[in-house]
Length: 463
Image 1 (cartoon, rainbow, N blue to C red):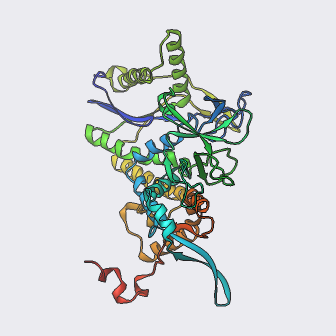
Image 2: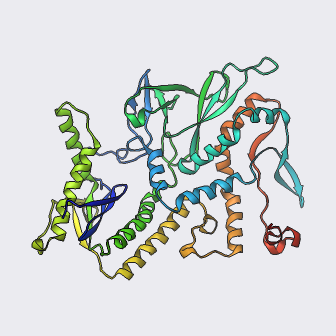
Image 3: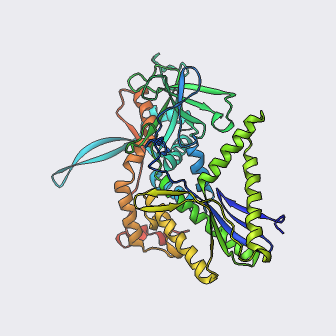
């Protein structure tokens, strides 16, 4: 019966089923043993690195994430969730507002106080340059990157361009996909000096790549092409920003797995009776064994070997859990006990029975989902009432949504706008040094419906 095994996956977690049995399965995160003398504080961090790795041309890559895959990790986890992409789109719209416009900052007197305001202006010279390339699509792409990784890569294309006065000129800006772009530095230099764009991160074989100097704000025309990585500054990190969504990934995975679990229960018309947990270290060690075996046999390691091993292991577990002949037997693997302060953490395999009260079980899963939504809302810095993830589908009051929106505008726009427009404003300053204008996002002031005249209310302006 175990030959007819179905595995429905989400990341490393899964629901495993046969026609007669179902169990849910998860992989626990590794727990670091603080007594390990080989461990350093930088070793278990996806943001900090004691060593970069050599690439070429006397350059060292500065990896982003444990396996240099932070952007794709975030993409894969978030894209599988039914709610989070919608929240990202709403956050994108909140920053975009009425779209990008040119402005000049001024101080005006209001009630005998100096108040900084933006004077929105038109400038044909700058606008003609913006319209000569896809600046709107470029800005949308940089906002998307900022929402995920709190930064973005922008390529300055000079290409020997000159203006009508015969001076050097930045032709356009190009968004670089963060999945393919990494910072790099020269050997024995502490700070990033270059950016590398290549598919090497996915293919593990640098068939083609481009190397760019980082953009020099004090000499913007130094190179025909250069790259700026604009990002927020996060505490105790070296080169990349810590994505705010990173800390909520486990909640996102839990939220995403809930529909999968309920689907498996409904599909099989049987309750999942067991929840199986395994340590991530088990799989890390197994992968290392298979890599060493492949190397000894003179061939490349194939991740499908680990998947095949996992499938056979699932068959063993399923056979034990579903067979009448195995009633009373205990499926066992060696436990790894690690001392953490006063607590003993069990990091071995465990098989726990699931309470068969399906109503309570489903209610618990929904409760977990609601908690996950709250965690994601906090991580993204956007109130649930304007993120569209209010609990159990209920709509928040208009006043609560208005207050949340006003607070977001007050504290949630300025820094993201600065990061997103940093490159394009640097180009405007370089190309038009005598024009004191910047590009920013225009926002109308929100008002309560009762504070508006009748003709301006939404209900009276619906076609």
